[in-house]
Length: 198
Image (cartoon, rainbow, N blue to C red; front, side, top):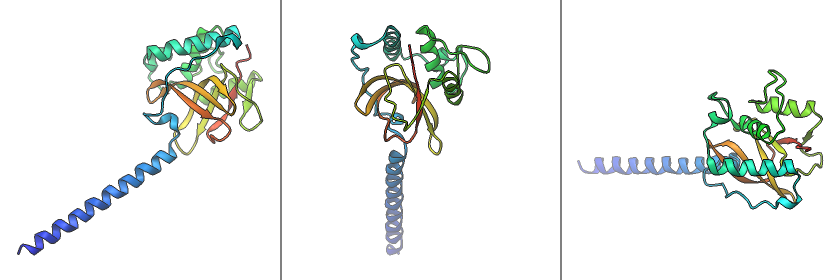
């Protein structure tokens, strides 16, 4: 009689071990699949940016980003109260506060809530640099991403450049304003850059 429950316990233990193994492998696959900017532990402090080489507008953008990174306001603050993904709203708000407001091609508003429309805006202004064309981003430029098969579109700012890597600051990165490193040459999600040009 006791052999049957022992066999069941062993089968159950093997089953649990198999489920745990599958979950560990699946978690590892997700980590390879998800860009680092979406991982909760991959964030950095706001960088120490040398203002001496910046234009007044670049300096204003960096100062605003640093202040908002410290403040960590909710996304609705940047979207005029709308509850929606807010990375493009954050970019729009920073540019408006820096004295370089966008003009939404659909509404005329300073706020462009969609990443694709933000790209269209930069294209219409002759300020879009597609990925792979040899352009090196500058402080204050906007990075435009399209993780079509992963996490959708995203946008954030360049605040420092060192060789082929940049430091970015963006809103709605796990619901917060976060700092990350970016190798724009190898990150296949980068669609291009919106130039600050001021």
